[in-house]
Length: 100
Image (cartoon, rainbow, N blue to C red; front, side, top):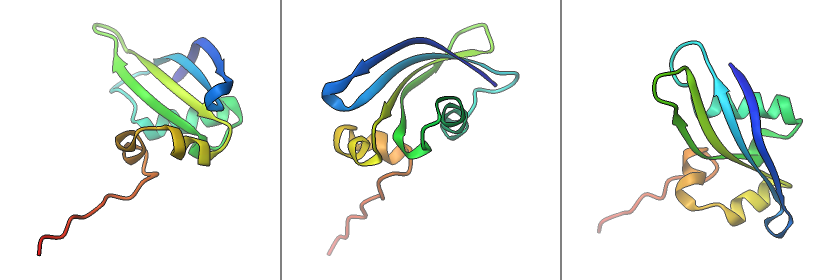
């Protein structure tokens, strides 16, 4: 898997960097966890600070586009990201509703 940064924008108001990346792969779209680990190695940031907002395959090629947020701290990520995105990344436990 090869990751190429297409755009890198700082957002100091939300304490994050916003990246648009292009992911090249050999077979099968990589999982979010694999992409987060590779970005962690590339950027030198902890995996908990990296949130993949959106990832979609490019039709007809072995590439995918992704919009990624890299926060200054994991606490900032938990404060600003939507709950369903945090659940996808395993940063928020599922709430079990009890019927009684």
